[in-house]
Image (cartoon, rainbow, N blue to C red):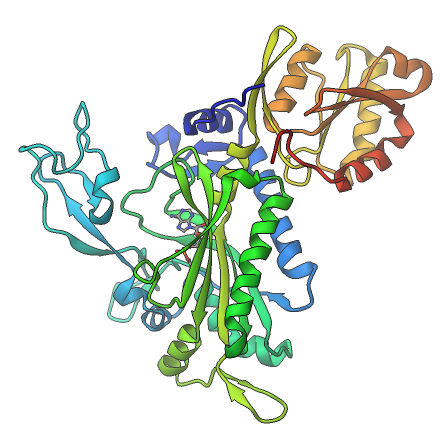
Length: 452
Ligand code: GAP
């Protein structure tokens, strides 16, 4: 069967309809490109965070975790180059009063109807480009006085570099070793948009891997492969993923090599995650600005500044990629259904427990018993509200891989049906075996239908 055409509008609409993501501050008219996460959005983000943390920290011996502050000493951002260089060129149109990124004018539309490209018509009155710093400023303390200026972090990475010495000493690590951090970052993007793809407040998952200088290239390649495989493992289609290496002119000031793991979003191929070889830029900068030695001294006395390989991604970009990749529409029998074919370890709800007849006390009691038994081990949901077909479709739309249904037969022989979200096949199993069945099912290898 032909695959459904997935548009960003369909994803936004499903995310809203099913309570994954809401436009923020809606009762006040909304705050453009800012979102709040509902229950299923929170569960999905928790799963993304957990799978990342397992792969980056728990399943390895060489990476430790950190959770640094959002507001760091302002000099951190001088040393990192963000105060001087974390800018985008900005252009204003005096006619339509909108702002555009000067380097993305060809992709921009102005506010008029029909919308034009900025600069396209004689009425367009564009200013010269000005450099605009993307960091959000704030003040620390009660008074706005000299020295109180601070910034919300635009990346989690710097919180890792400034703790390099602590980790080296206290966690007794030697290169190669890594420090991983998950947390909110803030950027005053000039042109946020495309749902969660570019927002001003997002949650980064970054890992800085410190290596002997001579091994940097090898570990750079290693981390590109590792991260690509993580996406494949959690179900993104191979055909919609690619690695694109930056040319020298495209690289950030700190980079000796950067590769984007790109995903084919509905807006086209775009950066999902970046893997960068940052060399010794950050440790050298912080050593100079803080007058603290940031180097590794080997037991034989050899000293060096480790080089850094950094895989960096936001949960938001993964949420969009997972939803887009999972979204499907199909006709089953006479009915259309929308289904999210999410990997079972990413799906917000692993299984639904449903009494076939919501008004049957006996079925409700059995189903609730099963639900209570499962909920301590798994993310499960109980639902007895409405026709069974509607309840299945609701679970399909939030991507629940399995539904256990208590029916007439259960009352006779204590068996239930299990319905598979993807194949729609149903099998019967003893109610007492459901817990183990679910444990096994989650561990089973899972691939999307038709993935090459
Ligand atoms: N520490 C390196 C760094 O922050 P980056 O390429 O600017 O590099 C890393 O950002 C990742 O953070 C990106 O690959 C993307 O996944 C995510 N990201 C960056 N800006 C974002 C935004 N405005 N909204 C959502 N995610 C963003």
